[in-house]
Length: 298
Ligand SMILES: [Zn+2]
Image (cartoon, rainbow, N blue to C red):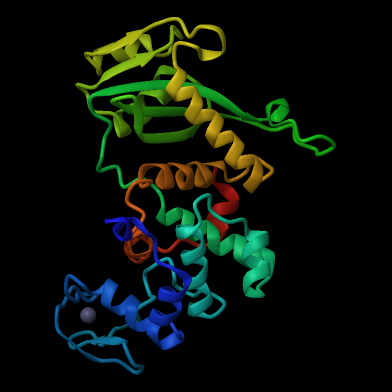
């Protein structure tokens, strides 16, 4: 039974992916596992393309590679190293910093950082599994004084709203989002995306939550208590996130990606096996994002 919950070992990984070709082959299997369809004209018939694993449309002759149209599109280093990054990010219990990746793989730290942002993009919530049963919602400030990294210039702060699903005595699911302000509109849009409308939701007495009672029938408000004592589970999750972030990333830029990574890992805590495959599949199915976007986004 125990075997079942073990993650892919480095030996399994190396046996499965000895070279570039094995990675390309694996991506092609994932990409077309539900069949081929030409991204340009939608035709479902293809012939072999110019290179192994490429597929050429029989109608418009467009050639698709296993990486085109995925988060592996135009990666500027070997695909094998890209797979190693996905492997380390997905199997390390607490994730891995770009500095550590750089050391392990002999790539520049910035190169690792940028590709890791893509991996984190694959960790974004699918929005398919909303919180049901019992939920708690609260906002917190990340950065600024709170981070308390001495001697480091760190004046920026960001507001984050978190929601948890409570099951039994524990927390079964976590979502979080960077919001510009804690207005009913911002809180509401996050809550509608992550929490079922019949869920029993506990929030504090902040006026931003009050108008949302029309969308959530079972939303009730209680005083937050000293240091959030009425929201012990949620506050434990928030403390956990902040502690993890401190060891990983010393600023609040690109915060949403780190929230996504934290929630992804948290929500999958009990199903370690398959996490590498799951993440690869998400990266193949996600739309490619130009690196530039990350410099502009939250
Ligand atoms: Zn076509």
